[in-house]
Amino acid sequence: MLIDFQQALAEITASPALCLAVRRDPALLEQRYRLNARERSQVVGVANHPSMECTCSLYRANRLAPLARNLPTTLADLADQLTPLLTQYWDAHPWPLRYGALESERFCRWLEQQEDQLGLSAAVRQGWRLEQGALRERMRAFLEASGLAIPHAGVALGGTR
Amino acid sequence: MAGIPSAGEESLPLPHPCPEPMSPLSATARSSPTRPSVGLLFNPTTPEVMADCADLVEHLSVNPGQMVHDLGDHSPVGERFAFPAPLLEALANLRQDKPLNAHSFSLSLPSASPLDEALAGAITEVGERLGGFCWLSEHLNVIIPPQGVERHSEGGLALPVAYNEETLTLLRHKLTQLRQITGLPILLENPALLTPLQELEMEEPTFLNHLYRSGHCGVLLDLHNLLVSERNGGMAMECYLEELDPAAVAEVHLAGGEEIYGVYTDSHSQLTPAAVWTVAEAFLPHCPNLKAISFEYNDTYFACIGSAGVRSELERMHRLADRCTQAHRTALAALAAPDPIAASPC
Image 1: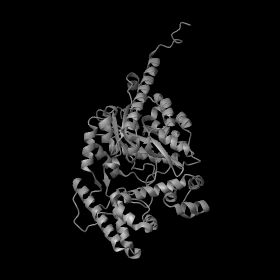
Image 2: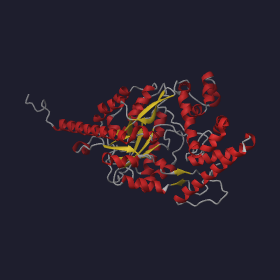
Image 3: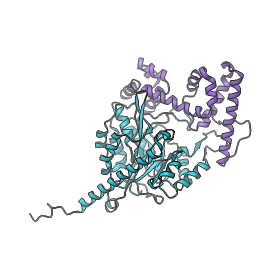
Image 4: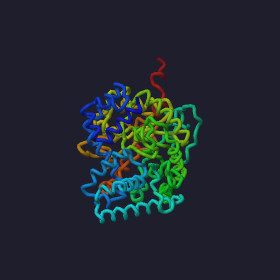
């Protein structure tokens, strides 16, 4: 079934853990997707392709790029916590928003929800807040330059569910 | 539709001064061969290149997705799309009277989900704000997974496509819709495959030939993508070009890449490699409907490539365009010359 076939290819690319699981046990595909024999064989072939490590890495690099562009200080300050945090974020939101500023704003709001568990220092929290504020200001300036009404202060510019 | 094999739609006007894309080698092309134009894919360093090489740049291609920001269906400002006016104005000034082609990486046409008609409309609006696109090209990749995402989500991927009847039917429907919404001729670009699919029902050039011959789109032939696919286990470049209908090719992309994690990728980080120039010089003179040759590079590598590097690439592209024109003229002359055997009294 085409829709499941495409979804399977997308999910093994977005999740290295799933890709490795399919390599170990291709029968896992039957539990998650409706695939005919040819589609199943093609998905298993992609999961085992020697370029798959690179493909998974490029996916993660593509997801990291807007965050690195918009929140460089925050990412640097998170230091050793960054990699596990990003993995959790990408598990929670497997697909990026097309507009990088919105994707970055969504990451900030997700980070807020994790704040109590992270044990961040006051300095890290302050740097993050400043960067989030600057991002929101840039988005407001962009909307203004685009001739769109600017939401009042306090309204999340993310605007996504 | 001027030049495109008809799928039953009415002819659509092309904005001046665009060349007619994809005109089959029929009356018009036979009597007045056009020289393919030479140009660049727009990026933030293009103004610097244009300051140095404006005489060599005959057209620009632009990713319309970079000219519109998608705020989503739940946008806090009520509008899903925002158009960055300063950027649009800068590009409109830069293009002046040069033809402009849209080169999109957003619509994910092969995805098993409906066409994002609103996004197609936004791309159309970008074209209107820039003074008109000649045609719209899209990538033959699944970019957006079909399930579990909002419309303004992307996969962050460029997945391979299953070349079969089901995908052909899906694409034919979407291409017809897209053409109706945008009013533009559509080209599909062959993908750079890192993980090519095996056990395909049909090969990629056969799939593209079907779409061209049924009048749904032309082909943007990215020759560097062919090299990437070949090096990662896909079809050999020579075999691919033996199968692809040369008449389907309306635009060509040249670019260079590099190995990342031991895999050859389409990173647009280098000048066009020798292997790509070899097939370009051998194949393109046989493409009677070729209208544009474009060089793509990633602006983050501009410091390595340099303005001089881009200039040398453009100069070689002009020599290639001249060869294509000369080959076309020679072919026409042969057609016009009397057949010595038929003319013989014996």
